[in-house]
Image 1 (cartoon, rainbow, N blue to C red):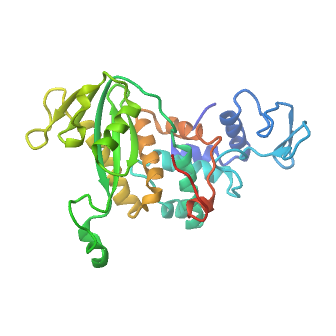
Image 2: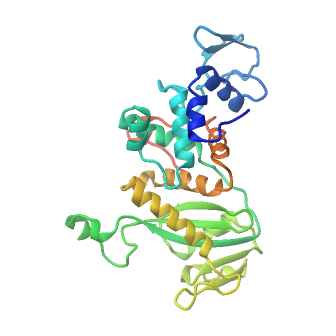
Image 3: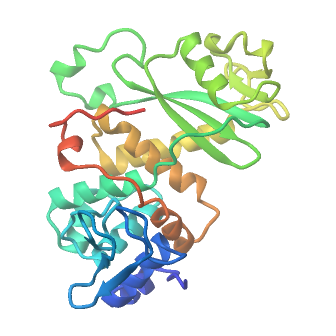
Length: 312
């Protein structure tokens, strides 16, 4: 599969619907087209409708390349979908729904829905425990008080993190990849619980001097950097994860402007994907994002809160 290397190449390449369809088939079914309902390879292509039909007798015998992916039930052509995936996967600070709306000539509402489906494709899902060296830190996500309406500003009390969403990150120094978790608070039980969930005992854990990390040395080789004194002490620092926080906030504040807390985990998935795939070229990131489209679906009703959605 020869993927384009630049956005210009991608637009020209995927302008041909036959290439779009072949690319989808290569991504979804590298070993041959299978029926998404029964898994049978006994299918044949209906060229006039550009769909397949399963020879087995069951409901939904006919299926398109979009069925069973984040593109399912979308009237938007694959050429526009692929361009949108390319933009979201490769724009360092993210790409807003208004930018996609203008670039692809779809409505802003449609572009917003496309954005969130693509973020779902970038979602890694569950992780296994790993060992090694890790930087751990937490960050507060939310608007600056000076930019808020006076009615909202009046509700802010206590520390600078009051009223903001809290995100915990764990950066694996070996793989240079990050794992993120939207957490309820910065208490010891919460933060140390996330560390134990993802990191094998006996590993190196580097953190700042926040008291909630006290006690990790019973299970890990825990080393602390006190930012009131210095930011680096040999191998002890959290500079890698601090760099990620700056990238994340640049995108949230500069591109998306206002992110609802119940959608925050989707934006975290997006930024973590680009950070973890940063060593690849644009074409490689596009293919990696496309490899996550299968077996995932989110409806507009779930995104807008009209139906319940369980978030792990």
